[in-house]
Length: 255
Image (cartoon, rainbow, N blue to C red; front, side, top):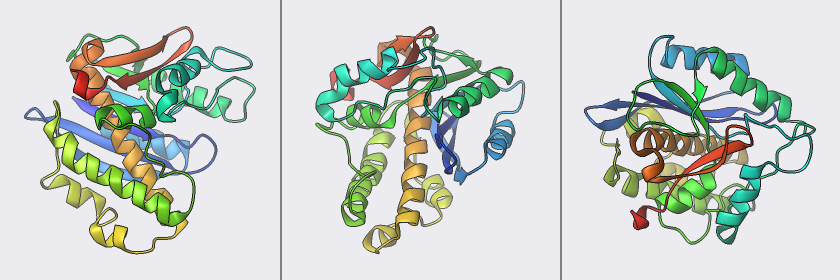
């Protein structure tokens, strides 16, 4: 089974892309990169999961937006469930500038046979897509009391928070089920971008954003695998197919 995480650029900015492959019950990082154009992202998807092969794609973007104004139900529910962690998401409606781009992306996935899966039979092969949101996933997977604030603020502070995320990924995800195998693939696929040298240097805002996009996409891909592996036993679904929905892991400490 293959799992793709897409930290989709809601406007025209690049998107982070991660491809995890489940081999011998462990998740291997097969690819980790960025693409700017939607057309190039779709080519990448077609190469990773050709027609006829099974896979689950987790997208950090609202691909189902039924409402013309205001907020979707899942947007409101993130504030209800995760507001205390500062992990409520942005509102989405059809009148916002990004809506056409994100909705059309979901439709492109549907045209390739990736059906929306706000409910799923665990470990069943198929072609699926879900919407995810990295902030609450990070809080729950790593047992945090607030989000890691690596997206806004001074570069130095963002770098420190991103380093925390890197450490949580390398320390925690290999111990969960399904386990993320980092022994060889992580160092190979990151190509030094997330090395200690990177974090001890003074990267530009552009390099920091690239690292952020890639780590976010890795979290998205892991949530895809976690949803497929456990279903609703260890995951929370905010919303449904008619309102839009967001899938996020339950707090690992509560399992």
